[in-house]
Image (cartoon, rainbow, N blue to C red; front, side, top):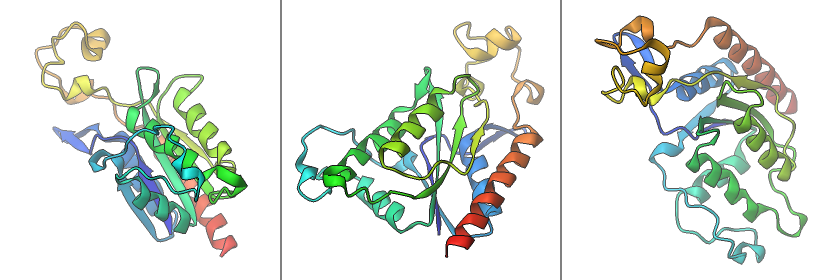
Length: 217
């Protein structure tokens, strides 16, 4: 089983037939389907994931004591043959719930146990920047758990919330006006779309990931 973990809280949403949000979700589901393997998709958007409190009570048995939804997904990570982790860029860094989720893997590092060591993985980031701060953080946390180097990294510019907030067409503080000027309405041609080459790259990463999973069985 391949586990997809989407740190973006924005579900797929369409306006006049065009995708206006849920970029990470849509690409992750596409990638998971193209692996040819069984998979499970989970979104952190409807989960409660607290940040690490530095209590170090996990040092006893490598089990975090915080009572939220993290442990359930942790156990699925242990069971999975591979993990696909996706997250968006908020203000130049990974979003808060994605950061908190990965931060909690600190509980797995005590006494050199590293239960995620060697785990196959791939990364999806809705961050078109260079360097890609979201990718760098995810890689850092994966390395800290001695996971395998990513089979692939899929990068795509995200779709600003300004396209769907209801006020973006004439809000001078938002990205819609900064790109298009003040509009009478946000039309389909204004909304960014996921390029075909991004889907093609997602399919290529999926094929590699699926092949490696099957080889390791």
